[in-house]
Length: 115
Length: 109
Image 1: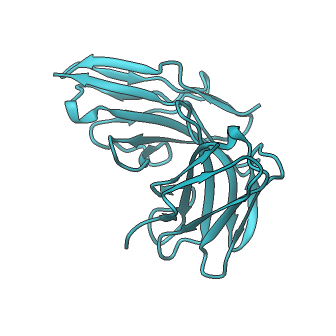
Image 2: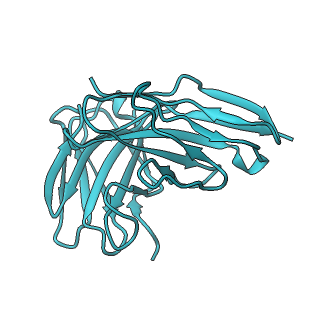
Image 3: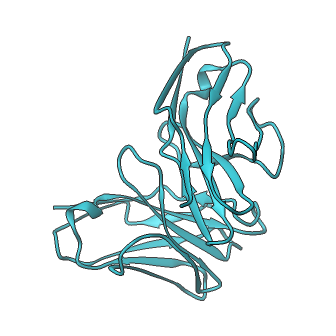
């Protein structure tokens, strides 16, 4: 198993554009979480999805949305990009059979630059 | 409000010295706490969780509910322990994770 995979690895957008980031969880994991990590800070929780339903949401504006597909992969969408959205976006999956509930397995992240 | 505080951005120690990385949390419910570690050019990964009460790579962490702390300790630091360490809280009442801002541990030879 390759672990949690995220695509693309890097992305450059301009202000006002929209972006979609993708994540494939560890095989068997049904929960996917998204985080934003700005340089010098810890990951900030954006969403958690379980069985295709949103279970938790962080303090992010409605420009941020996500969904989870029947195969448990997930997409994070950000509309009307702002310069402040420039960050590393991390995806994490959790659940049996690998690890347990709430043990997050992280992907390598997508580096988003907004110009 | 829920939060996780790691007061030290950088901690430098010599090899063989004891290490303590501090973590304090604010949460009214029953917390589930974790330490995650990120080695150079690697992904963020779980180091340990308070529920397991185990020692991983010589590190231990004890949940102190009275002081709302979950400090990470190791009696004898090794150079390979140099990494970024994050304390994290799962707030079950809110279905949210909270991460601290991280402490960079530098173990000098």
